[in-house]
Length: 411
Image: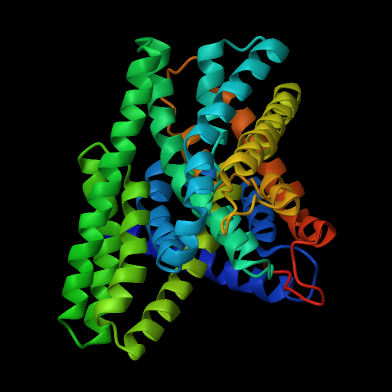
């Protein structure tokens, strides 16, 4: 990168951050979610400014923005709450993703004639709830902590599963591996990634325990967040799952064995700021990556994509998780998951930057590439605009928020 390119990149970064700050100030006075306003701004910018000025690449989202977002969310997950909801999270993060992928592929095939193998590619791109989208929308809604853990935990872990399934779906288009091989690969990657993250989190926690300098400890946490992601990706495992596990270990074990009160405050404050910054960039870039003109001609296919995702989410939330909780008491404390919580889980299944990144990463010569991208982009916009704007209303209507609790529009 030469001097001129570096200067242009820095100018663009400052412009995006300034725009995010301005949007944050504006939405404090209007009933519009912060994330939705950022996407709208990105869409407007992409329409008014030549697209060559904004090169939104999948690597930018997956390697620069995503590790920080999932790490910040995971260090706040309390192990006690995570343990009580882990059965539900695991069910949503693995079988739930696979069921959604299959339903999306089937409905798109029947309704639009899209080949099943390509339907599986679309399904893998839109199956997982996006960590940035869900966490940014859900954080300030004032619902029970256990429900928040279930929503956040699902969005963190199933993102890694969706990326694995996406890679297998691409491979399926050309080589057609067996179902057994595909399921085995998913299990191996999930387990291996968890082990990598656990080891990395343990080592980082022990290093932090030997240091009494909050600046060095913050630096170690930053290295753990991005280093774990890069290591797992280099070993062809899931960077998302590894980073989430590392964050959970540091946020619980690391706090317990050696963090001073000052370090804990610094860790939470700094990573909260990092997450705010990355969330703003993520949703601005989502808007910049999507061309509204291209979506108009694909509205019928997008419509069926939205129907497929909605049906898949309903089956997973009410059928898979709801039925399982009645028999196995996944709700914790020996009680099934309340129906009100299932309503929230159904409607809070937003899609965002990771789906966009996967769509952008499709090879240029991939069959029906533009159609697959347009369906994915359309689903993302629908979930962000419609569900993202109304999720707080749904939570209030079903009674999953304490009476009298008020939240900001920036949620």
